[in-house]
Image 1 (tube, helix red, strand yellow):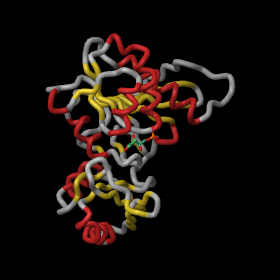
Image 2 (cartoon, protein in one colour):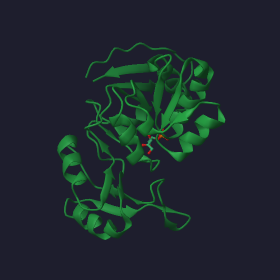
Image 3 (cartoon, helix red, strand yellow):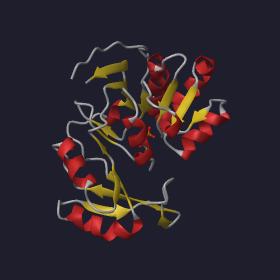
Amino acid sequence: MNTPTTPMHTPATALTQDELKTLVGQAALQYVVPGEIVGVGTGSTVNKFIDALASIKEQIKGAVSSSVASTARLQALGIAVFDCNDVERLSVYIDGADEIDGQGNMVKGGGAALTREKIVAAQSARFVCIADESKLVQTLGAFPLPVEVIPMATRRVLAQFAAKGGVGHIRLKDGKPLVTDNGQYIIDVTGLQIADPLAFEAEVSQWPGVVTVGVFAFQRAQVCLLGTASGVKTLEF
Ligand code: 5RP
């Protein structure tokens, strides 16, 4: 991992997690290419990026969004949202992560948007991850791994994770299974140590009924803007 550490801001007092998210959201603007369409992820950190993006909205064509929630926020701020299918290639995709390791591999899907996130990331030349330093890990797997599944496959997929030592649960919302933007369920799996993210992603993606596994190794980050106590660190992978 290459770690040029260019603090963009050195705070006198400790910043809150929310303030760190604001810092990295603003720092991500430097990766937005004027005149182009930018890929936009989902989550509380990305919300800070979207708010910052509004300040330069006249300089971009618009965005491709990875969720209904991000689309609504972008549009409310007057940023045009394009359908993924109407755009050939994006130069950059900006998104958060639940975990990121020293090679740019990530666990994502805490906000249940992993499938569209992976699609937009795959369409982008560069993935810039924005995260506070609590997300940086040595080995992926401490954060419960989100997996989007076709509802009828839930039991089978849970059993396949159990055979790997994982314990999975259907994610609930208001006491009922959460239904994603794509009409599917999410299971969250604990107890996994993901030592080889690429092999893990390749394997689980083959299981019948798995729509998307929340390991992003094929679509790993090339850059991570990490909010730390001493400012924004830029990690390049
Ligand atoms: C949503 C995601 C988010 O990027 C991830 O959950 C991080 O979210 P936050 O910025 O709120 O911590 O993958 O599906």
